[in-house]
Structures are given as structure tokens and as C-alpha cells.
Amino acid sequence: MQNLVLNQSIQLNNGIEMPVFGLGVWKTRSGKECIDSVLNALEFGYRHIDTAKIYGNESDVGEAIKKSGIPRKELFITTKLWNSDQRNPRKYLEESLQALGLDKIDLYLIHFPVAGTRKQAWKELEKAYKEGLVRAIGVSNYTIPHLQELFEYAEIIPTVNQVEYHPFLNQNELLNTCKKNNIVLEAYSPLAHGQKISDPKLATLAAKYGKTPAQILIRWAIDKGLVVIPKSVKKERILENSQVFDFKLSESDLAEMETWNENFRTCWDPTGA
Image 1 (cartoon, one colour):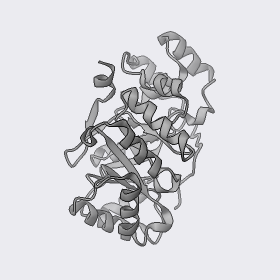
Image 2 (cartoon, one colour):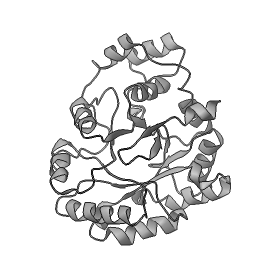
Image 3 (cartoon, helix red, strand yellow):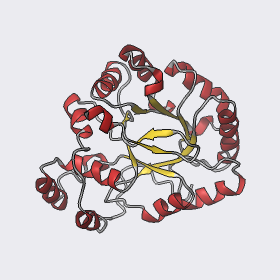
């Protein structure tokens, strides 16, 4: 039952289903640490794994997928086109496919809106999508101006915009722009890298629901209709992060959390890129 609930999905604008919850592997060390993290996640019922070329662990994700024995059709794998590779996306997409040991990537994202190359990169992603090398294409770290620029030349609207998102960086204007254009917003670093995990307001809510602060943050993202990809390399934390489908936050608590925004950014700031 846990696995069935864990893999509730959202339909992207091209009709494919994307699990709303997954494992991110940013800053997960290549080799045993990454392989074990992915295998543990898959054991606990995760079916959505998010990696990127720049993380240096695509081949480890691929190895874990192979070792797991889970049918490919049950998995949703995301990877990303790095900044310096945007002039030749097809070459680096093929390298990612080889590293992952896959013949198709479920979601391929432009990792960052690099001035001067992002238009060319998007047009190449559209070609890869039409050729069936990827099931969906999207962007990451795109602000509203970046999206508005993309809409001027895109033949295919992105399915996803993956950005840092948590109650302390509650980018509601960006979320509303994505919703208006039928783009799913995906939250990376939903735990703010643990830097707000001891916040008294969060601790109070955690105690109220009998959950951990991390579980409250993850549930908040899900209740807002986001896709969320918390990262951990600890087996117990990977399990803990997944145990968020047996409760929902009340409307009043969700409203309270909407007041927590501090524009507190823990990762790179794409504003002005």
C-alpha cells in the first residue's frame, strides 16, 4: 500500500504521468554512496530519480537501476543538460543516455538559463523530443522573465520548471506563472539544506502532526501541487522522507506556512541570468 500511495503522479502537459515524489542525488558522491542511496530509495518504493550530468553520478544511477531489477516502465528518470554543453545538446544527451544505460530519458531539463545558448538548447531539446529520445522536456532555474522569453520562440512549452522551493523561499508568482501555462513546478532543495529544520514555527507544526520537520516541508510541497525531490544518502532518512502520504496539512496550517517566506535562497540565484 505504501508503494502505491508513494507513487501518486501528476499529468504533464504532454499527457505523461510523473510521480510527485522522488529522490534527488545532487551532491551525492559517485560510486557506492550514490548506488546505495538509489537502491535504498527503490527498495522503499521510490520510482522517480533525479540526476544531472554535472552531478557526476549518472552512471551510478544507471547501475542502481540495473541492480534493482525493477522494470524500466515503472521508473521515471530525470537528467539535465549542463551549462557548457548547451551548444551541442544532442551529443551530451547521448552521453547521458549511455551513462544511465537507457534508450530513453523520461524528463530532460535545461539545467540553467545560460544567456546566449538557452534558445539554441531549447530548440535542440524539441528535436530530441520529436525523435523520441526523451519522453518530456523542461527547464530548471527559470524565472518569470526566462519563461516569457522562451514562450516567444518555443514550439513546445516546457512540461516542468525545476527550482528551489520551500516555505522560506515561496515563489508564488513564479508558481502562478507556471500554472497559467500548464507547467508543473518541481521543488528542489525542499528542506532548504536543513538550514531551517530547527525553526520554531516548523517544530511546532511537526509536533502537532507527530511528524518530523522534514516531513512537514515535503508534505507542504505536495499539498501545494508541486513535484518534490528531497535528497538524502542515509537509509533511515530516505525512508522517513517517503512517509508523508498518511496525512495532509490543514487549510489553516497551509495558510500559516504561506506567511513564512523570507526569500531565503540556499542554492544559486538565476535572477538576471
